[in-house]
Length: 182
Image (cartoon, rainbow, N blue to C red; front, top):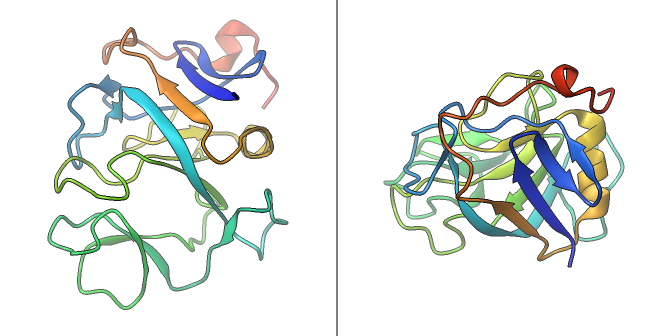
């Protein structure tokens, strides 16, 4: 089985380590909504979204992101931690964005499909804002490496965030380790 494994040096994909960023508060066993941490555990890849106006379909099972698509991150929403469409009277994250953050979104099964309210909404793998800039809990990569991951994974691939990683660990930049050029 093709696994993705988070390491202190980046995301291991097959025999390569790809530079990545994680939640601004590191990793946690006790993930909560808005805590800025990446949850420890073995998570399955359960979906992929992409912007058809910006790139070709990365996998046969990828679903296009449309202008009104959202992801609910409001614990009061009956559709908490699910994809939906505008309009919505609840708090949400727009999936169709002006920036490139969600040009490809790889969806994990973190707190999905039957969400426990407050346990944290989606953990995605997506494009980073910039190298070294942390996420709210997702794992983010450069565009080139995100495309590599999208082509490597299958539906059901595991994303492993080991308990041996600690919230206080410093995540070195790719330059410090002479890793990939992106």
